[in-house]
Length: 329
Ligand SMILES: [Zn+2]
Ligand SMILES: [Zn+2]
Image (cartoon, rainbow, N blue to C red; front, top):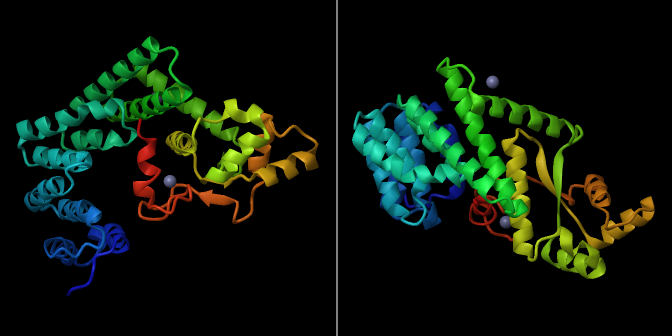
């Protein structure tokens, strides 16, 4: 066996996981590829090991899972927070409580900044430490709400990011406390209100798919040259435009939105649409209506793409290396 282990094959193994009749063979396939330097994209080495960890964990082989998780941390020194979280959870499950708590506590600040950090809470809750999980969620909510109060004039992006974090933290906390049979407190009421508000907001998005209007680089430049009045509606650079679009999609998805995507705008298309409808192309409502009118297969890009698929922004890079990390605060 000298075949390369591709990202697609790792994805496939991840999906098969412990449902496979021979999970041990899948673990061996992953580990031998790592040992023999046959991972097609060396950046996927940590990912391959973590998929193996997951299969071992489900099979109840915690000791071997721990060994591979430790190895995954060493393989990706710059991007190993998830691997460290997994390792911390395994230590807790193995009864090595002090070590596990130390590993997870080092990552705890992520709960205030990274919408993808909720795995820390799952690791705690699933290893018998639901009380600590609730305590950490409460602490993160306290900190973010305190910060939002202190920074009344934060940018719209920062406010959106904080709102998405608050939503996720409050929902997780609400559900964990409900499992524990605890009565509603103020944050639980907040969680209920936010959920109701988001359901309402989603209803307002029509019944169709929720798409955000997105401009490729040349089109964004042409748009602002043609209608300078739009300068205030868009960020200063295209990079910020796509980061803002990614974050908008993350927020909508956190709120339970499905069938998400971007509608790819063109200046010629918007001009023709506005003329046909007899409306001002620079009105915000015109832009929304124009986005809704884009229904052709070339106009729409579904979101999110697979981690290893081409990014929705059209950069040609893999999603996991392009816009996926841009959603982080
Ligand atoms: Zn409730
Ligand atoms: Zn991208």
